[in-house]
Amino acid sequence: MEHKIIRMRKRKPRAISRTIVKGIRKKNKN
Image (tube, rainbow, N blue to C red; front, top):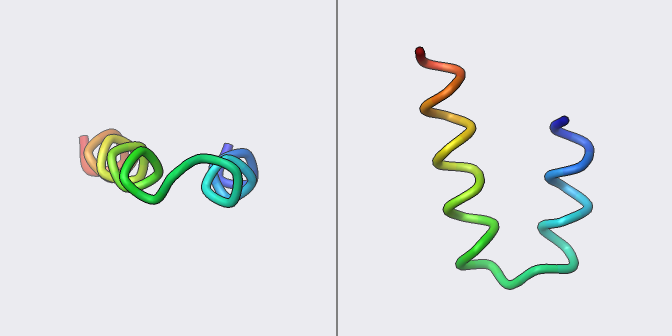
């Protein structure tokens, strides 16, 4: 999944990628 996020990060704006990273961090913590 991390690989997909990196690819999306390059395509989508930084704001959206930031929210995605935040959501993943929350999931990892839980």
